[in-house]
Length: 502
Image (cartoon, rainbow, N blue to C red):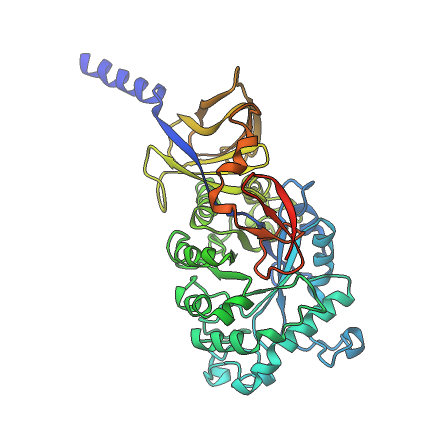
């Protein structure tokens, strides 16, 4: 009988005692400034393509529940019969109209839109077709851009910019190529790192930045953020000057691997680093992602930030494994058409609060990183310090947060399951402090937002401490400037922001 009582006592203790407190220490070392988060508006799960703008209305803009601000669209190489040359003023009537309605809605909401070619036109390629060439019916011919057509590539991108402008959309950026290292049977084009360098170094000056001021050039977007595609671009001064954003995907390569390596180099030259496509659970079958899979998605977002990413763009915005439901009954009753799915609310922890912030250095008293049970990151935006904490363990615990500035108030946003998302509560702070201990639920995604106290250690002193940012210059839209011409914005050594003429 004694043995049974002891076992019951241990069981009760196991259920009532919290795990050890996690200590998160935030310092004032500044890393990247985050441009934002987004998704793709492409054919497929977005059908009927081009006619339903409800997904972007649900997802985009500061008034939405999710707060996305970047949209990716395909620069299609395919001809479409219902577009005439008169529509665009160029003799290139391609299938570009599908993304226009959604792009217009995103721009209305203050967002960024960019285009990615899956392939140049077939007549520019070695296999004579927009298809990648990796299929029996195409004779397994590798589809590459013919070198005698390199001079046609950027003028072709200019026709896309012209068409979108004629429809009222000012495109913010265009990419070189979707996954130049992936040989496919659908639209695709292969480039070696050397071929991309040749194209950018010798022909990228043909992108018409005068007619389309502010348009930025994105590198090709390799499947696994392979550093071999970026090292030549960054090492060559001429090519480096042309590239504004370094981009890639993280299929098969966790963010703290290749992406972190590439970002470390690109950031030295003031280049933004965007993760432009990934979907971690698109192969889950006839169900929505479970809560553990949602937490893994949150960890992916967090690790991209820790790696130095300035922009994160998910794959489809509407799919049963994405942000907006499709209405297909085989995925469950929760998959209602044009209704936000749990993954959208998980994304909102970052997109609503981290967009526009600068990442701060942080560390935890437990192991963090890829495949760890606990992850954290920290950011500063205006008068606020934002701390993210993701705990995949089954036991609740306390989190002690040590901050570089005294704070006077706080807000916690917590998600603990697909049914309990983005619950808000006030963090009680009796007097300004740099250290706060807060209960943290098991298997939870947490966003803590603290308001900096404005006396002595407050925001007035922050400008004097941001050594890494003192020399950075921004254009009038707030984007980091690489071509420093015209009126720019600079933060001086005294911490004050002022305009300068370059």
